[in-house]
Image 1 (cartoon, one colour):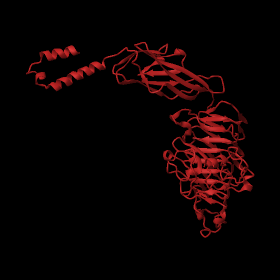
Image 2 (cartoon, one colour):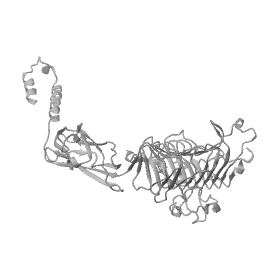
Image 3 (cartoon, helix red, strand yellow):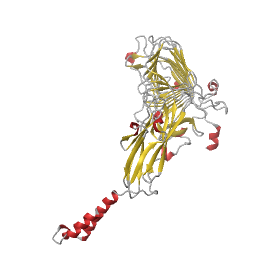
Length: 534
């Protein structure tokens, strides 16, 4: 290249183009040619090596036989000269489960999982894309899987990038209808690809530790009966089948609307769910109205359970009898709990409406007497020792009934709800506003918009805590991690009625409510160690 430039300069005359150019321009042209020459220059110096954006490409625990998402590895040459790669290969060769594409070339198409002859020019990079599908391991517990991606330079230097994953064997169900009594007690996850139906007259029992993973759009419909026997140590889990992450700090499992939810049909009664963790669904549990509105057999008993981070209503009950004890319903795009008629009772429950993804969220609690189908008589709606809170000034809505919907033999709407020893984010009732209105609220503590305790476990400047968030132990709205245990300075502490708390002496996590003689409202009891920290 320089010989060409020399010949051009040697033959240039004052009347030529080069002769008319200033010396600086000539130098610029020379620099341009020199730069082009450097760009085409490669080195075999052993000190010149590649730089990777990570030394390990780690996949999350993957379900056996289910393909992973694609990971990307950036490979950089930060030097002033190009580097040639004689080969890129997988250490395990054809036995490797990993699939690799290097700069557009698919390694899986080669018999020995090896690609040759790559160039990475100076200050340039190439992209490596990786996927994996893991075979069954034949065990119940996740098993590690690994390999090494080897980059061998023209200089003979070999650089290594570790590839890691873990495989979890699973049981896969597709379009499954249970027509006889069935027990799921598998230690492996049960993956519902589309639908799981408990047929009328049948009971599905979920033993402690059972995990049901639902594919996008899949759900559980109960026409018969559902029994969950979860414990604090081994909850029964309902979640998405996605095991990867949206961001390094945020698994898809913490996001809403990844699967449908649980629908308890009109024909279903006596469902008993203990120790369940339901999250990431379109809705939580929907209890359809019985065919006969007068049929108030218990439809659902929910104990020591959690419904959180769903894209619709958390718990919905229409003309249904529902009993909930030691439960959390939190962070729902729709109402946390929606009651339309029926007979419901909530004791030591935390209804927390802090849905982080949309300001147009529903209420923590919505109690209705009518819907598009007409009037629904509310037999009872009892809330004892509960916490009902959220971002809104008033998170409890009990709309007035359209009186034209009342039966002909009924002139007034019955007020059949009560809040007893609760901590509430709602307007303070005034007895003069409506007859018997104040009598519906017994020994309750009302949360002001500036109510706060001392936030622990979060960084206020990073997490953007509001005053109401500070009532609780953990509020990480970045990674969607929450702990609704009340902190030491929160006015939730000591609100509960001790006599009623003694009937349920342990909170959702098994902590003793009666240890200090001052039980807290809600599903969680504050701990003595928090007093010391504060």
